[in-house]
Every structure is written in structure tokens, then in C-alpha cells.
Image 1 (cartoon, rainbow, N blue to C red):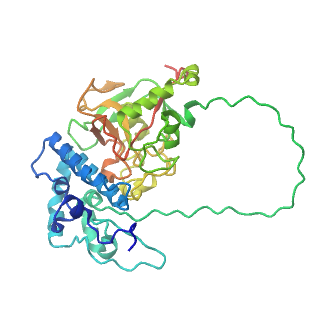
Image 2: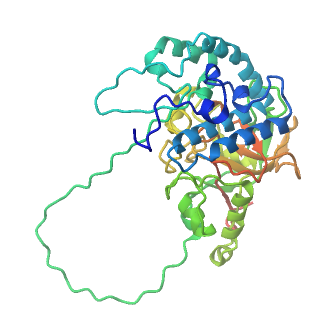
Amino acid sequence: MSATQPPADFNPYHKWLGIPEKKCPPTFYELLGISLDEDDRSVIESAAKRQRTHVEEYLGTEWNKFANQVISQIDEAELTLVSPELRREYDRKISLFKKRRKNRQIDPYAPRRARPAGGKSNRVVGEGSGLLRDYAGIVLILAIAFFGMAAASFWLPWGKLQADPEQSEQVNEPPVKKKEVVVKAEEPPEPQLGVGMEFKRLPAGTFVMGKKGNKSPNTLLHQVTISKPFDMGIHEVTQKQYEAIMGSNPSQYPGPDNPVDSISWHEANEFCQKLSARPEEKAAGNVYRLPTEAEWEYACRAGTSTVFCFGDDESLLGEYSWYKQTAQSTTHPVGKKKPNPWGIYDMYGNAYEWCHDWFEPYPSEPVTDPQGPETSRGRVLRGGGFSNSATFCGSGERAYVSPEINRHSYGFRVVRETASVQE
């Protein structure tokens, strides 16, 4: 067997984290090594950090694909267990999962059905291990019982994404006699404003922010007014754009047009400051910054009040988003999925996006241009990332982590303030 081809039955949970094979695939509690009644946020975060450290040593090796997928699951476990709402929903479903695992109806080592010639897929141990093909009836029951969340949280497909290179059409034409061209001296091109970023001017308006059917103060429905128009980046900041300003590219999923990833809040904020400080931006009156959480949700909803900007049907999410079920464990070039009704792309999935605000519970009364508290336990992230299930991608879903953290799925988009925006 090739050194770059791990065995098909390799179990990273057992080999790297010491989780007994009979408990694989693990629950989020087992994955982090904490008890079911542990609710101290700092303990949960420390446990996730400890488990990540065990796995991160395999990044950049022949085990890289496994490592990225397990880290993605650890991230999702942490975000779920520190959120009271997501944790309650998860806990309601976990007993059924453990019962089926005990009966080995969820079997990470189930034999795979032969695939057509020419197709080959390797999957990480866990819920992406081929059961969708071999046990369709069981998976259907799980899908109904878990509402699409628990199954997506445990199953980690890792089939290699392959794209056929575009073939350029060759056309044989008769040679054309070239005319002599006089080359004239030209002025050097002016620096490109905003390093090529495109923006959409969004109108002022009032909308209902939060999550329907949830009375938690963290997602409480409340009225928000955005008092003036603003320019929202229609794409996440790409690696090419980030490197043009910062001189480096920390991304783990390289691609010039992919969103920059592995970015902390401080790094995203520094990018905005450096871009704003360029002479040509100052001359144009442009200032760049992270969107407030209210601006982000206003832009994401695009005048809608449903779970997603396209409605409540989660099955359509793949048309708009690179998320856990469509991304195949990597980011993708921006702007390749459908935009929302206001022409903004990738608001769900691809990169998990930093917002300006520190996190705090929502108020119950109407507010205008909220910007969050002076400080709190973490900065807000919105939209979910390529490794997250649909649960994290709704318009009203929110998460928060320390601004120093730069996990693999974290990126951002920017708002542009300009003198041309009228009050």
C-alpha cells in the first residue's frame, strides 16, 4: 500500500484520540472526552483544544485528509455543546444514535458495495462510511429522527474532489499577415481600489433579527433598524486579495479565488485597517471594516424572514452553499453557488465569517444600528463554514469564539464606507 494512501478501515478516533472502537463513531461528548453533564464553557473549550492538539500533528502529512475532517468535527462539537439551544436539540437525538450504534446498525466497518468502474472513494471512519448506499432504509430513519443535524454532525465524507480540466477548443485558421504596431509609452495603471473586491449597495431598512421558534435570549426575535445604506462585499475576501494586502496567505485550503481561511478576528480587522490606509483608498474616501452582526444578517436575509434566504427547505441549501454535505471537506472559489435575492454570494458555508461585534444576548426592544457590547466572551461568527452542517448555516444562527482563534474554516467579508453613501 502506498504511503500516501491510508488503509480504508483506519479509525482516527481510536488511533489518535484513544476512543474505544465500540464507541465509534463517537458522540460529541465522547469526542471531546467530557461528561454528559459538563456545562462549563471553559472546560468544553479546553477539552476541544486538547483534542485538536492531538490531531493537528498529522496536518500536512499523508493523514492530512483524516486530520482536517476530525478537526472539523471537533469544531462542530465545541460549537454545539457551548450553545444551550443547539445542545438541547442535540441531546434529544443522542439516545437514538447511541442505541443504534450499540446494535451496530451504525457500523463504521460495514463492507462497501462495489462501485461502477472508474469511480473510487475513500471515506473517514464514521457516519460517512458508505451507509447511505448500503443501508438506505436505516439512513432514511436516521434522517427523519435527526432532522438532518445529527447525521450530518457525525458523518465525515472524505472522497477526493476531482475536477476535469477544461479543454480548450483548437481552431485551425489561415495565417494572418501582421501589421506593424507602434508601441507608445503609457502611464502605469492606477492601483486597483479594494484589491478587486466587488460591493453591493444595500438600502437602509428595518427587519426582524433572530431565530423563529426560539425563546432563548441569544436568538430572540427583535426589531432592528439599519439607518443608512452601506456597501457589502458580495464575496468573501479571497486568498489573492488577502495576500495582496497582508503579504502572506495562512490558508490551509489553497486557491487564489477561494476564501482566505484560518483567520482570527484580529487578522481580519488588521486587513481592513491596512486596506483603508492605502493612499488611493484615502484619496477615494474609502474605509473598510468588518460588518456588524446586524448588517450581516440584514444582508443575508435580503428582505426574507425564513430560515434561509430561499425559504425553509433545507434540501435546497446545496444550491446556495458549500457546506458539510456539498463541500467535500474544503473551501471552494467564491461566487460559484447561487446568490441571495440581493446578489450576495456564499452567505451560508464556505468560510465561517467574522463580524465586528462582541457577543451578547439580544435585547427584546427595537434597536437601531446595534454594534454589540464593549467586550464579552468572544466575537461573533456567522453563516457556518464548509465543514458545518445545515444547522449552523441559517440566517439567524450565531456563534462566538475568542478573537485570537484562527480555526481552519474562519474567514470574513468586508463592508466599505464611502463618502458617496448618502445619509
